[in-house]
Image 1 (cartoon, rainbow, N blue to C red):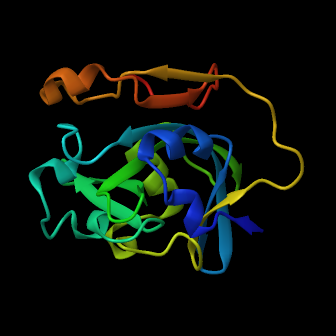
Image 2: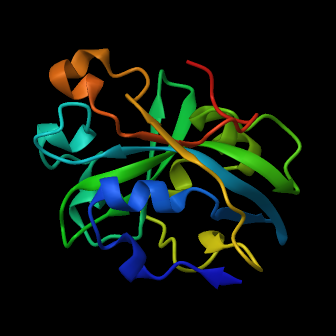
Length: 184
């Protein structure tokens, strides 16, 4: 398994996000890997990005975003859905990339076309907050063999209308035409 190194994440979120497309998210649960190909992501740039959780500063919820890159920022929305982000850099930049949708590859038996759905399908919850994405039970890795060619589409992020001018920034990246993308 070719796990992405910490240096991969030690860049701006808008640069890391499109490069996560086509990578495999691997969650090992009870010794069994659940694998999905990342097909949709959103970049959150940290302050002053009004859509980023870190725009309000360092809090108990955002603490991991103020640390080194390559760690999982997992949070709960609407009191019922978990969302997985990869903390990015450079340094302690308080930015992250939300993993929005996966194409199931192995061991995934339920829908993955949305951030809450993919977390449910892979058994990702708050227990993985701050988990090191370069080792252990939750990692992101390059697929084996040559990388499949695809077109990257960009658009505004979903569900951030409150973020004023930041709501229109083209910081959502998808594998164009993939049938596993989330719905607007």
